[in-house]
Length: 119
Image (cartoon, rainbow, N blue to C red):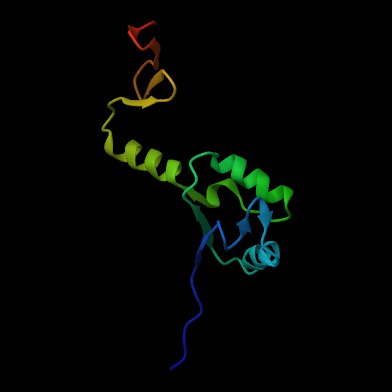
């Protein structure tokens, strides 16, 4: 039974396209071939340390061209889900004593120490 060619590819970054800060041999060429054939693809990663733009820049420095919009990260999925499901409400992010409320008519930021709010 013949198999139809894939309509698109979903590629994991870690261990498939890159490893330990280096491109896996052949991966830049494989991505270029997908682009040349106009086969849609997305690259997934569970990293939460780098933005999609940073990831795109880093792989470009190593020879692969993966547009920012082709990256799917844990953070981008969380942000998209929140945007669709917050119904205009606020969302707080906490990082090292800093909270920033987004999706409000006027963004709100606050810093605090262990004893309570500072600003």
